[in-house]
Image (tube, rainbow, N blue to C red; front, side, top):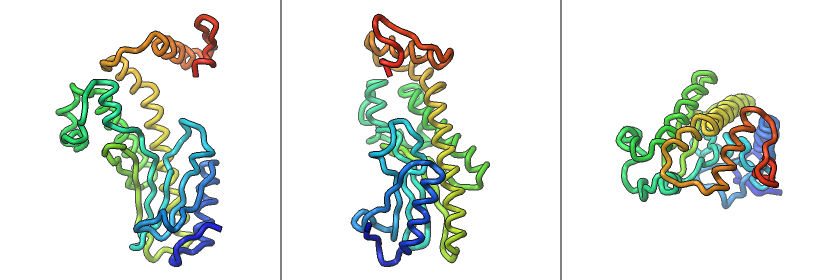
Length: 229
């Protein structure tokens, strides 16, 4: 049995876990006591049992000691790695790239990265309007989505209702951002990246695009599209 903090209602935490599993159709785990800091309980996605690329918009859910319940997505990527690999730009996180007021300043230097951060923020805003949530983009070294609500004084049923609402909004934000990154985002990086693709990478990208458009299987030499994935 997973050990949780004395303040946490074990039955309620189990209900949160089952709710998230029902919404996402993915397995979750209850955090051990040593994994908790300011929170009294937490439930998180079991990464070992999901596939790469699956929706991780509701990655971690926790209730803090002041009654705030927060939901975090998984991290997108490492900003420094993307800036370095795509634009030969280094150590930007030590500067002021991640402050929104400076995005315009860096648009010419790392256009794909800035466009992606803006797109992520836009998808969060769209979900907020639809669900009445307050999703924010944490534009730090490893960006992610975060939302929260004050659960102090709420019944367990009210908490579960709000958790479901916020989780669904987070999942939708993540999905919209991934769709943008796959299509419009990839186009921007292809046009602006300073990284030279190898022949295999270039062929893989072309085949992927053709398959996305036509849904047909393409081959290069003795390899089919499926073998490139």
